[in-house]
Image (cartoon, rainbow, N blue to C red):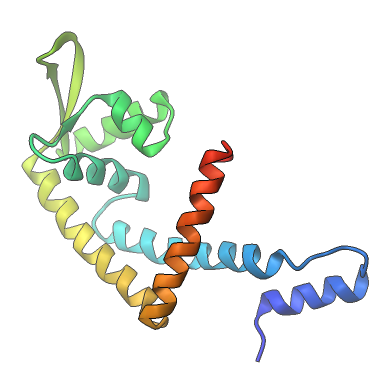
Length: 166
């Protein structure tokens, strides 16, 4: 039995034998899996009235712990968004009543972004469903395969980060 990626690699090998397409075995599969995962994840967040980026901001605030507040620059770094994109996202979340802006007690010229009670409740519900979905997605792999894959991906990610690739 074979998958789409294996067929594509075979086609490349047949048509252009001097080109090594074997990295596709891993990278193309990862990209295809990522597309499928993102579709399901986006659908889940959409059922809560959120885009994936909205959830990212709310989740960052929630997991930061009490008082569930961060500076906009901290949020931008955590989500790797530009300040302009973050501002429009925060405007949207504020209109939804999920976050609010308050003066920073340490620097009156700056603001802090606070998770509201409504935002806290919503992100906890969305996160619970999100983690449940992730567990279901990984259920096709036996625990020892998941553990091995986690280790491989962590080492690879760390090396890419150390190289400045990410």
